[in-house]
Image 1 (cartoon, helix red, strand yellow):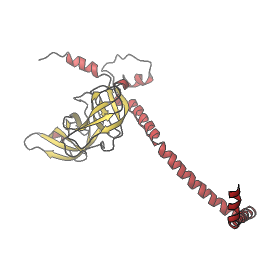
Image 2 (cartoon, one colour):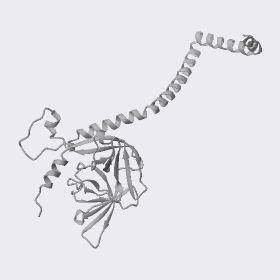
Image 3 (cartoon, rainbow, N blue to C red):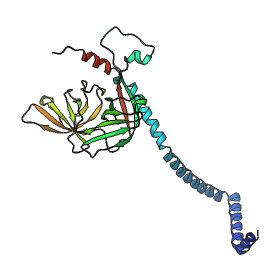
Image 4 (cartoon, rainbow, N blue to C red):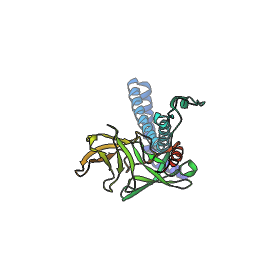
Length: 283
């Protein structure tokens, strides 16, 4: 208590000045409309600025939840695409108690979102690890796509994690096609620039040009990728004078440097197709 009195005694003049100053401002703003309006405008500006900064900080800390929500919504939209459904070639269709299946056929592809927890782009054989595994429905050979294009294929699975062979892997090979004319070839990586892939064995009759769109093929060797997914665009056409084929340098649609989330694609009719093809008589 003694210290408080000593403080007041020492700074009495300053405290009195501040009190009188505050009283003067109060009287001025309450009995003068012009000054009241000016002070109100300044107060609104200050509080608005403070509120904006607070909202910016709050928004930053909610970015993860917002991003997770968007990823789940994208997976839901993928699952509603017509390309995720396919009806058998028959007029005898058994109707199921689902409007979606009735109108679009039996589901063929199912998309599951997953977070990337590790990846590489600078090696000769690059891999990606995602936080979703066998317990969450992932199996080897499932295709993996990103927000902008295809990414690779699942090769190993543990309970809660999966290992993906990236397209940026010398062992990777995906069947892809030109959107213009549906000419198909083998999509591979030459181990050089992570932004570019090579589409080999394209017939010269395709008349491919720079800027042409490259998609996943309707007849995929892996059988995992839905047809018509974005692969990239042709950046360069290389003619092989010793053959009747072209090599196309393709700018990959997927940015492997900034990949945060992917969608693992399950072909629900794959096993049925493989079982039937295995029964085909050998020549």
